Image (tube, rainbow, N blue to C red):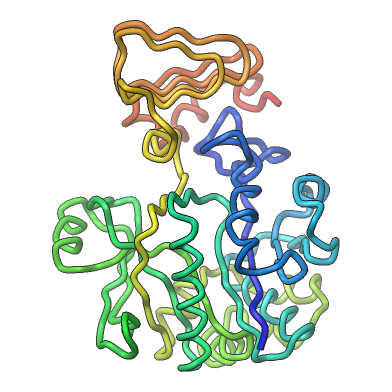
Amino acid sequence: MTRWAVVLAGGVGSRFWPLSTPERPKQLLPLVDDAPLLRNTLDRLAPLVPAARTLILTNAGLVASIAALAPELPTANIIAEPRPAGTAAALAFAAVEIERRAGRGATMICVHADWSVGKPQEFRRRLAEAASVAETHAALVTVGIVPSRPDPGFGYIQPGDVVDGDARRVARFVEKPTREVAERMVRDGYLWNSGIFVWRAGDFLDEVRAHTPEVAPALVAGGDIDEFFAAAKSISVDVGVLERSGRVMVLPGDFAWDDVGTWASLHRVRQRDAAENALAGAAHAVESQGNVVHAEHGQVVLYGVSGLVVITQDGLTVVTTMDRAADLKKLVEALPAEVRDRR
């Protein structure tokens, strides 16, 4: 029995404009520390799964950049999706590939490339435990994060009956709730839906065939990636497989996990100074509290301000508040094309 890691590293991360671009998306940016998020992810997984058994699924245009970032990975382990087709299709193709290489009993540990994890050793311990549960019970296992706050930006999982130790059946998944509902769910013991999944390749493919007509027809393509993605319809693995399956279990995880989703989220995951400023690059904060600065070029000086997000990049400076930084779509749409689409 072998264990594999699958890293989902597609997408752009438009909420990190102006740094994120199709050529340099969020997962290739050094947002938490000096290393790109994807490099952090691979280093975090390395003690658990060797590079030879680590697959990265990404956009075709990023293969060369990822190969340069992760030279330890075999070229064949960087898989270019011909088109975006949702996480159900991506993970199903990864399962087909792992089954082809290692058999249907091989276990997949599936993560995203754009997370922050403050306690990597505990992260690996929980993933190993999830793998054991998946192998023992032929289950699809997710690791739900013990919430640190009632965040309406996450989906939630309601744990059900106890099965084995900390492992419980999933009673239901809840899409992003209102803040009031999130507060109630946190009190009631719900977990954040992290997107960490662990299962044996064959078990997952069996559930796709049984419950996911959006992707199941693509499985007849075997290992032909173009045929597979041409036949697959876009759907998330949560909606397309997990919410329809009766074989889903959840383990709680408490390892300082965070989805690095917005500029404001960097205030939670970066090191902060004594005044709670999260600064990267040439930035100086005087009589200023609770700001986020990402200075790729030039110098930034803050004086007597709080709750700001400041991003500088090659002649462009963006200034907003922590609250408004969560949704830059309206800003980007309002800008002239020469500013919005700059590279």
